[in-house]
Length: 131
Image (cartoon, rainbow, N blue to C red; front, side, top):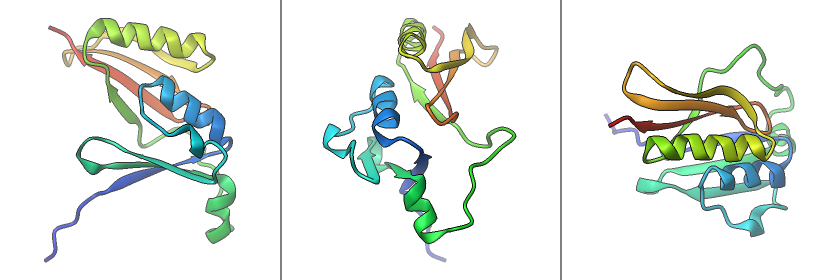
């Protein structure tokens, strides 16, 4: 049996420049030249690709695609490095217009933790180990 290698994750976006601006504010290095493209991507640690596709791209090969409703089953998680950075990044994102889903708190599992929603309503977890 061949070993499966997960190489990336695709996020469907309604407004590419707005979505990429949000993810840049989260700390991701995404080339601004991709803002006007229907598909964009960045390579993260370990070669993992985070890809972004517009609704039009998705519907070009799946005409029946509709946005999910009723909650999420996956969330991107960003390690902010330290608890103060979770608070700072959360405040910066919310101040720039992101939706606050969970304000920073010290979770029982040993992390400073917060959740914001990206421009399309996808949750993005911000976390750091509590010393």
